[in-house]
Length: 92
Image (cartoon, rainbow, N blue to C red; front, side, top):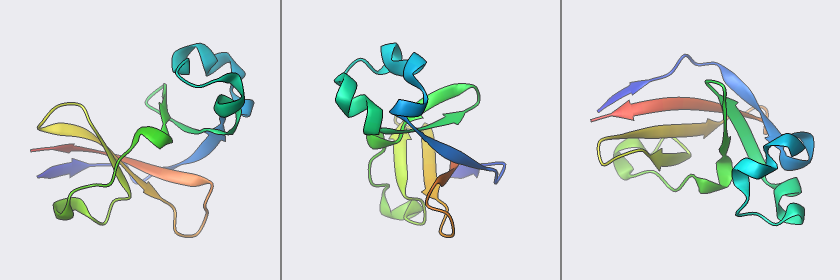
């Protein structure tokens, strides 16, 4: 498995900080959206609540969001600052 990251942590945004993004996450009610956590990666916001537990082969990451069977995004929360997250991309 090949994992690529630039090791740059990004700050977590809550929905109340990015109200203009609500239309992109309309599966939330307005109240739920305001407390949901998002992070911007490569110009796009990602819902951190959609990441699932990674398989054992990449267990040092905190979450995975597959694009396909062979690729997807990874996240790792900063152990020293709970308001930051690291993104990575995996390929098999």
